[in-house]
Length: 156
Image (cartoon, rainbow, N blue to C red; front, side, top):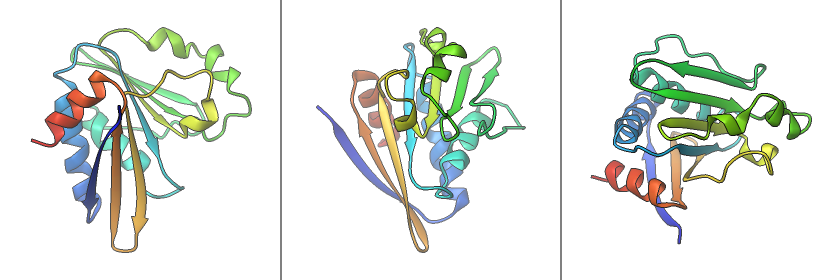
């Protein structure tokens, strides 16, 4: 059963605040976490991912648009940030070992997940971002117990 929460973000600072809250909540989860980031070009998917990753102490966060995946590993976390926008074939994800990242404690942030269909893990949570002129709207949907745990924490 999916659970949905809708939020409005008024600027980039709100996006970073939300991303930091989500990252803080992710620290409470021992399982692998898979989060899909959905939305049109330029709505803030990478900004949200950057804020999430920076919460864990990584200052320099690159967009994985051309490399398909950027990994961020330290003593606190193991994050893989995927961007499937430039995939010519979903099979490419198999070549870079996407399934090897599905271990407890790892976090996958996946942009353009629909383009990797059949190769990526099902989402625990989807965050759909839309641009509504002066603000961004988030629609957060959970699909698993892990997603529900994250959403409950965010909503406190």
